[in-house]
Length: 250
Ligand SMILES: NC(=O)c1ccc[n+]([C@@H]2O[C@H](COP(=O)([O-])OP(=O)(O)OC[C@H]3O[C@@H](n4cnc5c(N)ncnc54)[C@H](O)[C@@H]3O)[C@@H](O)[C@H]2O)c1
Image (cartoon, rainbow, N blue to C red; front, side, top):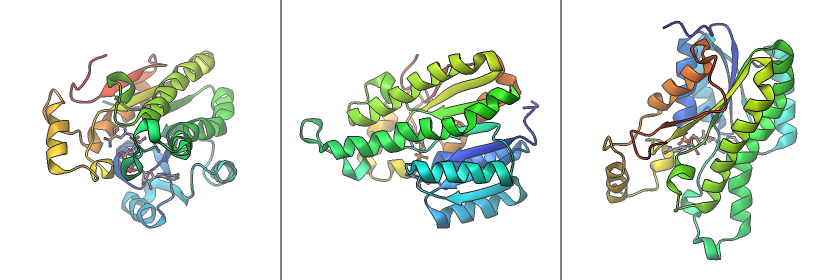
């Protein structure tokens, strides 16, 4: 299937590990020129090296630092060209910082909302004007199945990801008249560092909650992202695609 996106410029956030890394490889396989953003400088270097000529640029930065984000997207515009595909992948649950909600320090909420919701707004803001002008663009926001299941383990993460889904719908409506597609992919439990803090028995319980009886692989999430970024999905906008092995149906 020709995805029709060879030669396009894509930015992937949280590109150095897990799902973001898999998305970079998948897009590179389609001939996309990929710009990688992550704060993990060492891993970022390794992923960029593995991508070879497909890595158009890579920048190590904290994506919650708005001034840095503006500076880096400015550099990308000059050095690589207008961003045509944006994958807002960066985000995380509290993991080892998890606290019972009634006793949680609100600073934890700020941390989670900053990294799992506001980065999506900040990065999107850098690219929408040029996408609108050029009348072509794809924004894919990585949400989660947590807003569909109730995501009881981390209400702040669930709230952030529900925000990502709402933002996806609103931005999709704003940009639809300009032929810019905005969609979301909502992964179920996927085998990445996000799962590293769980014990074997917890992982078994999580796998058992999936209809297919296993965790997802990052490349399976990347396939869905690549489809939505492609010309094959030109009439799909504002949607959230659950990629979860049948954990919850929507
Ligand atoms: N793995 C899962 O089970 C799962 C399930 C649902 C949704 N998701 C979502 O998928 C996305 C990717 O998750 P993952 O499991 O691949 O995570 P991961 O921890 O494997 O990778 C996240 C990447 O983001 C980078 N990062 C984190 N904070 C950053 C910051 N402030 N600035 C710059 N870079 C930063 C990390 O260095 C890392 O490379 C996240 O939005 C996550 O919430 C994951």
